[in-house]
Image (cartoon, rainbow, N blue to C red; front, side, top):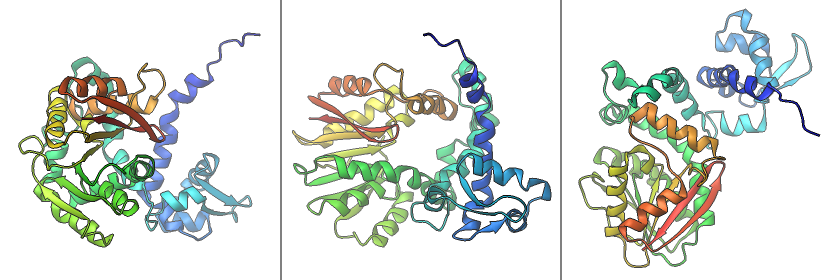
Length: 341
């Protein structure tokens, strides 16, 4: 029996910015961090967050209904506390904190996405550049504290995928790895932790090198993870058996993507591999909603940058000379696209 058309999915999606803004605001206010391991009434929590009494209980109960907070009992004396996921991922005191990227979403992208219609009509960025300011990367790399804050935000987002890559990929045939656009060195650190036979290099701009060195030292891996400085559009990449690019290729247009793929090919030996970790769009472009939305975000941020499918990656790498390909699902919407020389 055919079900009659139902508008509930349309309405749920149309109103989803309400839910998003509640969660993003809670993270920006430090709600989950303020709670920590405690249980507080709405009045107590509101006082600590310096909220108007009108916020209680609607704001907190909305988070309970959305399963981002939990609550003990009902009424004014009910006490709110973190869910296991909230404690692990949204409390800034947790080593698994991912709230940094949520703060950035709230501070920047939420308002920029309001101009999606203009981006679709013009093909132009809708971020700071539109308003006569420096581009995101140009601004970040000129302000070390902001750069480190941004990298911290991306670390939380990247960690799950890099851990999955370190677990799922077969590293047995490789001795050296170079992570291009290595930022804090996270990918090299996660791989080196699990594969003692590998020597890793985290390659990024000179301004990033001190940040990476500090994170590598904190992990106790200075002997097996080194840093190298350069511009991947101007300089040759360090030679390695395995070259990785975690959420790098999607930042650029096709010409620059091809430059990076060629540079990786030139730096690899026969039998070496290039790995691109992204929210890969499925080949039929029907399933990976996050990958497709990320590609629209690249339009908002950069105009001509875009995300891609495993089939796209295979075609581009094949043009350069790579011979064998595979896609390894990592976590959530993300996968590793692999090309072997």
